[in-house]
Length: 363
Length: 72
Image: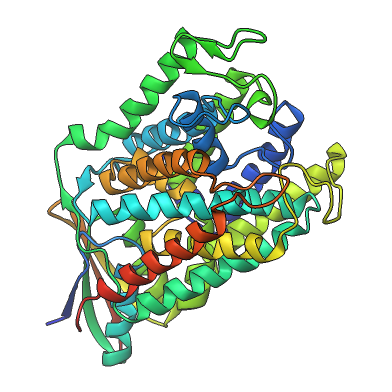
């Protein structure tokens, strides 16, 4: 265990984890997940919100086992390496709101940073705008960080607090097994399913869960973070995490090429739109919100798995944000941005700026 | 006596930010950084080394870590 810990924490460790995610995310697409969406934390959290009936967008309803696996895989890794540290209390309500707006921004672009990289590596050039937006949002976040922005200290707490998000995910898994999909039906027990659209496209539960658990385990050990990659590069000139995302993009590209999933161009890309300004703008908001919250959506799940109650609140914010996004016409579709998506991005940027400017610790 | 940077309870990237700020002020000497997660321990150690500082010791303390970094 200790040797593995040492390896995954090294430069080659983070590169291996990025490569693993790149290869298996691309394979998940071959095995049934939607196009360029082998793993998308935002899209999959949104699908979970749909499965629970928190929104009723019929094409995006599925209890994604990958997300469950991320949290539980991280939990196993954290316990095995004695890193399960229950903690909570660092501005949870702010983290909730950041989760909401991070999700809204990601759904205006149609993907989290992970999917932006998968889209790029499969030739969807719209993702270039999304990634530039992500980097721009993170850059603004680093300005706030340099100005003293800080969410405050968390406190050690009861083990039960750290167990809440893993137990919620375990509950979701139980629901998935209790109420499996019925062919052609939109509902099974309490869970909603999609009969068409991205929500209807998924690998088998076992494959999704096993890959999710593996990614959760390795990512916890390596601290893989798609936001931290750019933040650390901009703020500290430390490229450690950046090597991980480079490996993800490179290996997803190679796997896409081998599997015949590489289709370069702007037009007719799966679950994507061509409104460049809002591909950019949506991800500026998401990048800024992730930066202010201290982790990309994947990292928030992994931290929730290792007992961080504040990251768990961010995750709940993402799920609620997804419900808002689809109930209020904020999320984009392949036709373009939703009727109120632009307004939501502007409001989100204002809210993030408010946090960034007012939550400052005086030196 | 080393200078103390208390980053306990603070999440990414605060421990690194605080450590690098202190490194800039001192330029050389000894700094003891208090953190409470393994992630922060690794990040602070990596950041200090990137500035030419040496990680002289890591001790467990109150559920977290004390990281002693120094530069002659």
